[in-house]
Length: 392
Ligand SMILES: Cc1ncc(COP(=O)(O)O)c(C=O)c1O
Image (cartoon, rainbow, N blue to C red):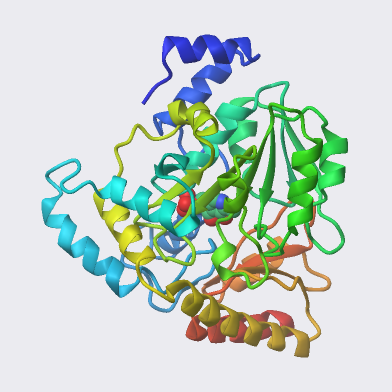
């Protein structure tokens, strides 16, 4: 998919240069080789590290390695999702054998209480995140976001202004400071719960943004981790009320479908119309769509997975508290910790020597490093390796 002459014209009018148009085009055609950090990049880096250990040979996943880098879900897709894949895969010679994307869209709409034309299906939420940057921001109308946060890579790469605003001391987004930092942003991006902290931002902050933003700006609420949280409140009801809110959802996290791909943007049709030209062209993998739709039909799945994640996370937090290790109390499948006397990157490298691959660091907090929550067995190996690192 490349940008049309009409799109080029409107992007040039918004202040993008021809060089930036090339970058936008490369993102849309996926011609750019991992141009900025995202969780997929992290996962690829770990694969590279493991492959280097085995002399550069690509090999099956090392059963001894613990990959808790990219906020993936080791549970994978649910049984019903897998059955849907088996059922649809033999029909894969056809683009849309039984309207899989339409069924997915209808299921999301029903689950979230919006009309089907308020849902724009996507292969995960990265494509709609990138499309949001292209649609709502420009070199003069910023993408204003939290620091540390997720999602700044695409707007920066295409040449949009990116404004980063420190999280509050309780690790929530500071809406007032975001408006102060850029009263004329094109998009205010709230990741709720936030990546990398796993912390929640209250509804009043989103309301503040809606009340104080420029008339034509959009509040983009990325709810990638919402299913793991006990307290985060979804913004899909604000979408149903036709507010200037676009909610991004992925099936890569609680639903365990990072490698299978499903996600969407949920917003008023006129807001979706702006991002549609930069999103997918409607060609979506039937396996991903069928798996996601089947997963949405499973009653109690989210609650079950939330409880599993919480139990493992709280066990790790109890371990860290006992060791007097500073960590941020997250409500998701990732959290940040600090080891006194070491940078986050040093902790990362030391853990890697024990084949436990943890996440990354953010420039604003070089002392902290992010860890994803794996299975109970994986986190037992994490604890063992972590003790060795502490005692080294
Ligand atoms: C906050 C957030 N948004 C969006 C994404 C994109 O996920 P995906 O493209 O796998 O749907 C991620 C990935 O980890 C994320 O952490």
